[in-house]
Length: 156
Image: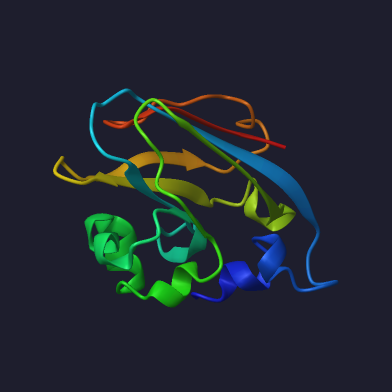
């Protein structure tokens, strides 16, 4: 199951030529001004049954903090190979993370859900901060997070 998203060509780095049609999708996460250190964010996808399907991006490069992204950590067993090559710096309070990835068309309107887990040093962890179904009609519609994410949207 863990290789499902690689098979579906989640990111440019994981694209398998000729296997699936993919399109560029911009993921925009704006953080609240929570007044703490940089946030660690795990963006990952689950399938229609809620099973982990793969990681899209990890903001925050120190793997010792990944255990605080508890839903992602539980789904992956903390396997840092899940984020190899798809990491970036942590995101500061009040800042924005904008990334563009090639996502397989098969992920949309098929029951997949994009999740964001968030954690900030010396502050409360926020598993499942955002959970949004991947649908073509949901593109461009911002959603609020539970604690640290002011808004999240994806655009195709």
